[in-house]
Length: 97
Image (tube, rainbow, N blue to C red; front, side, top):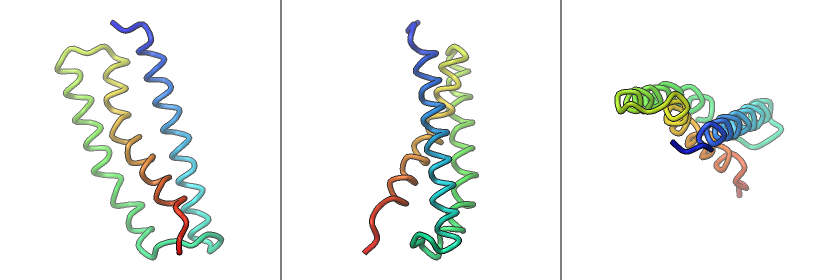
């Protein structure tokens, strides 16, 4: 076992949470008109949740079935959500022309 795995999982979780809070702030600013926002952003905000959580559940289940440790299972579950939060931050902070 990698002795740093619990730290890597914790860092992945906290990074994902920071990105999620950034996305919430950017979307809120877009909703109130402070930042430019796509008209479809509200739909995107809700439509992405289900598939992300299903993918996370499948990844966690696969890791559990493979006999991974609890921190490895948690890390597997965090990865799909973190991938989306990271993509959202990049998309929402891209300058609009």
